[in-house]
Image (cartoon, rainbow, N blue to C red; front, side, top):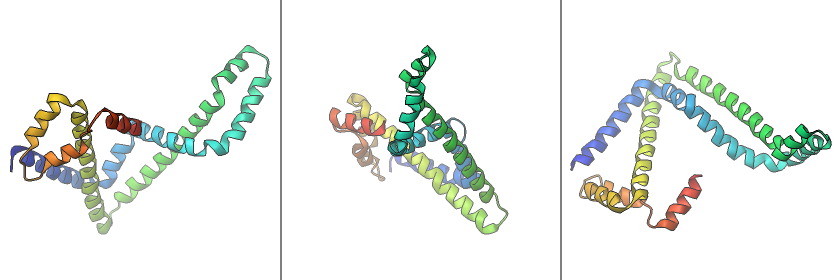
Length: 190
């Protein structure tokens, strides 16, 4: 085993210990509040908003017509901005944010229960959840280094080579092969 393997095993062990220490409820609350919570709410709004936009479009068109029916300059300006779509996403964001807030509070309250079985499950799920988050971050770092390419990616690949955990194969799997695949992956991320 090489140094990178030991570092990787240290990260895994540290993730498991921290996850068990804080528990699922604590980690879930941390990753779903603050800036993380806003990002999650925006992403969910984009997915849900585009999925249900077709069913809401007739109502939004009627709102657009009602706004444009007024002859004053402010209503005409709002009509050109498509303010009904902006309001649709603002209302959707508030609903998703409130639902996320309620779900996080419920999960946190259940995970902090004094029941011994729930305490044990909270620790186990916390360890697994935090480890998954760390692995996703590691995969993203590998992807970014591969995306940078050139000597940076080549040197990193050589540094990972020969390890018992075969991190070099993982890096090559996550490394984009050419510019077209990089563009396709980035379009998929957006």
